[in-house]
Amino acid sequence: MRIARQVLALALVVLGLSVLPAAAGAKLPVSSVSPLGPETSVPFGWVDFCQRYSGECDEAVRAPEAIELTAAALRKIEGVNALVNNKIAPVSDAEHAGVPDAWDYPSDGKGDCEDYALLKRRVLMEAGFPRAALLLAVVKDEHGDGHAVLMARTDRGDFVLDNLADEVKPWNRTPYRFVKRQSQENQNMWVAVGAPTSAPMYVAK
Image (cartoon, rainbow, N blue to C red):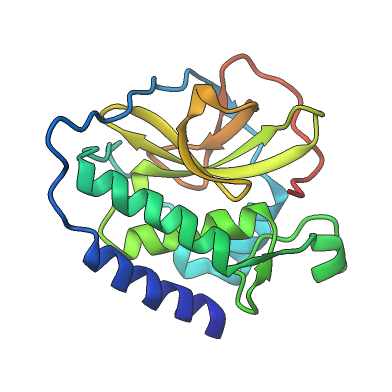
């Protein structure tokens, strides 16, 4: 976990510096709230992650929360997204772990999509953002391949932190077909996003 701790420490320093007042007249982005379908299957990668990090996967029911998207909060979210993207080297699970799909913290400085998302989630929670507003999500890309991102639920809609883009975008301005995400009430329950669709076998971006 040495690399992950270093990234976490650096991120918290960056977050501490990201408290400058918003520029006069600066406009905050607006998204929409992603439509939710029924409860659906939990990704195997999350189940496996929880077996190894049981303390981080408690099933305590929480009330839904939304991040107040001030200019300062947006800068912190954008800063964490860009920092993790640029500190972790992309490598597939097949090459890195010898299996098609393995969710973990990128402790050696390498990982793929879900590893980036897990670290961003952890850093933002350490910075005081509510867990119930930071939701892992599985999507399909333009080619139908599986990918994982972190969704941030805010009072201005849902935004996506993606290891393939430093810009934090409204969920509906990404090129993805959203499949499912964690429930706000219970992180170990997953719900469909929009109309149910078949989930990818694994995520590997």
